[in-house]
Image (cartoon, rainbow, N blue to C red):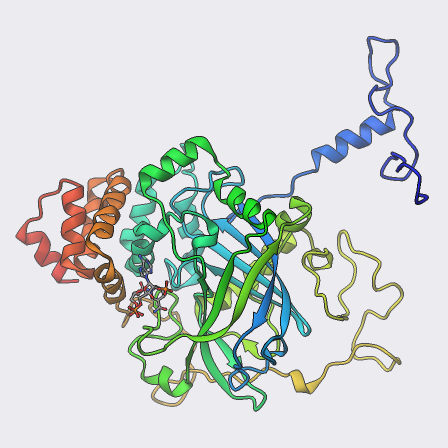
Length: 499
Ligand code: NDP
């Protein structure tokens, strides 16, 4: 196309198009001609405009931005993008609701996804988190089952409160996250007013190959703002895209939201004596014992140009790690290291990492080849390693991962087994801690929100779940029971106390 010429409309193969408003027909009233390849291309392409939506986190909104280092954390990590105060890295942040499908309303009670891609000079680091510091389960074998309860019932094709609470009542490790979900934070006012958390424990490794365990926190500089159930119902009636609209409009008018990136750090020594399993995704590390350490500022400052190309095809995986950031033994994290990239290979395609939004902005080279929709970027370069050829990519021992210590039994052995993920776990104290820090009016709102949902479950499920609330805090159980209009007997209190 010449500089001063109008762009010429063509088929996907480049053939110029003469008429884009009238199909080719045998006579003015039809029928259509099979040889109208332009029409065929258009309809066939249209049939393929959608890719499968994500099973979870389907409804998303995202923006580009910048991360700036404000504090020196090089004693903990050799991550290159954190090496100097003032250093900037491009980022892409996708928010989402978890349960709703692609067309679901934004302002629903749900956890929010907070998936952040850092395009660093040593590859992409994906911090695939949520707006909550914990999760509903601690063993990945329960994950698909849990998500089934959040989606649609196999018969009615409707969301089903009995299914949700039945599962939660059988998995009390969910109580902490359930308490957050039904607290005010379960209904954020906008996405600019949520915190982000890595939730899992990860490792930071420094240039001496020393490891500390870390948790990631992104604290909104806009402050936490939430809605009541009544406000959200009213908003959903008016605008199903309220969160997307707010983020898009804010960025468009130059009101760029910011978050403070902080970490909590735990040494391996501290991990051994910590009162909870530091790798249990249903637990937080108390701020008083592990204070937040400031690292940098995240700013969102550019809307995507094309929603599908950037937001829908953006693919985040906890397995996208960079030197200086490594996993922990957290079972949920370990499973996600596999399942996220696997989901993208299925949903977007084998070569999803070649798409502009997903590929690293630093130089990269590998020996992966072929598969559906591969680009020609590797040309005639060799597809095997090791090789004796000049100028081919080589591994570098400087980037070997830090050896990870494993737990041993009394005989000093590492023993593979199906360890009971409920034994020695306290599912109640931290949920109770959260309840106790909520002001009175928030407790009432939470109890009413729980009753509104739990009241739709079978009576047996209601009673089982009430026991869990009582175990977390007697006031918690009593308020929910009152909101459900259930009389609490001495027998029930004794049962709950039995844990
Ligand atoms: P702290 O008093 O030190 O921490 C309280 C933290 O609770 C606050 O800093 C805030 O986290 C968070 N918080 C306040 N209200 C709510 C709410 N309605 N829903 C969710 N989080 C809320 O006590 P602990 O560190 O011992 O934590 C007590 C409880 O606070 C935990 O059981 C957990 O439920 C919750 N919490 C703790 C976090 C942690 O990392 N320690 C992080 C988030 C929640 P923030 O500053 O991140 O907004």
